[in-house]
Length: 563
Image (tube, rainbow, N blue to C red; front, top):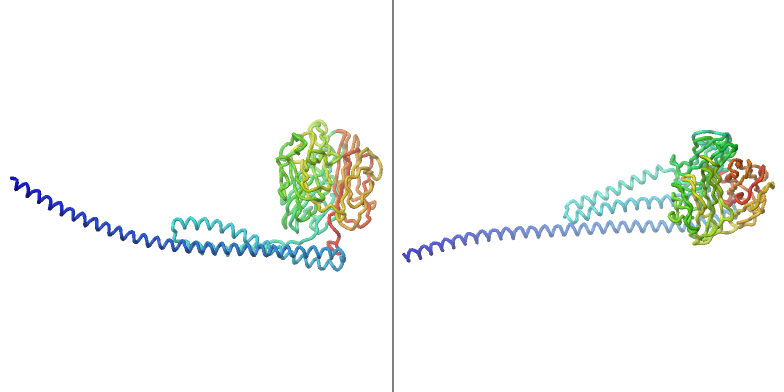
């Protein structure tokens, strides 16, 4: 029995050994297959490393191409800066010899335009190329991590896309209207009353650069840059008229004129806008109501390149500032140079120089408020803007254009003692230039009521060329000049006339018999020759402090230009 048991155990052991050999054979076979798969994975890994290396090399080539493009752009910028010096030197030569210099100026402007266009081509192309490059780079990096085999095809697609973008840009640039560098300014009156629609100011008195069309009432930009516009709308017959300034049919600014109070016979209001325009942009005025002839005007002028400018508008009712170190927080529409803090309502002067400030304030429902320019918590302007609305559902608007010589870092705000209405209340700033007699500028006001003719401005605030003498401004040199004046009527109808050599070039109309006080203003742009006499005449008595005048030299006359 024991022998049988031992034999059985030996047989079982032999069976186990046989099974073990089979399992060893299976394991050996599996190990062999695993080794083969590992070798295949190593080969694939090597291939992916090679593809990633090629991808990194091509990305490096794209980055090198981008750096070369930036180098070309910097080279163009250096060329442009060098050319700008040439333009400045040429301009000085022109002033010394206008007739000979004019032809040279035209040549320089043509070359400058070509250089600017080339620079714009490179800038636009590089910006587009860089945007697309970043997008494609992100796609390539994602494909790199996934070991995508379509990298080479994607790089080829990028190159084809860049070529297509370049061709599209060139086609668009060819179709763009050309820049026509030059000095641009216009001033036009409305001859007869018109109602409800686009206003055609058909009596054009100044049109430097011929960009305003008195047949359509449209100003068409020929030279891109920042432009300022002013319009005055007068209305009578107990009517209310809303006016809007449109850029390519988009409302940028508006004003309201109210002659509805029972004893008033006429009223006027002036609005201001500063905005950035491109070649081909169109600017015009539209009214809902009636604009009276003679007193209603439209003007615009191009601001100097490289100077800070601002246009801000009250998009909601503005309450009295909480402290004299803050201003009304007008919402910024344009802020060239980023020197305006719309939260605090403060504009900080970026450099020394002459600055122009315009602000329009509207009051309603029997309210009246004094509004001043403040500098660092103290009044800068010795006179206020003073809208005074009649009781009831009536409004009154008051505007000003003030000029000051300021220093870098000066903080300027519009501060008042009451609530201003939305939309029609605005604030604009632009730097005119350096404080020197090369840019004649002046400002004066009356400190007492006066019926003198011509009007006496007994307080002088600014006169950097000694050209302003209480009753008149005597042009110190040939050029195109801007004049703004405001008249305050007290319990009377008051009409005024801005005259050049005794010829009327602009008018204001106001009536303060219902609300007691009423402001009326206007702006004129006119060509003057040396010693031309500018003064203000009127038909009654002008009240004190708000009755003021300001003006400055825009640019020189060039013989034969824009005649």
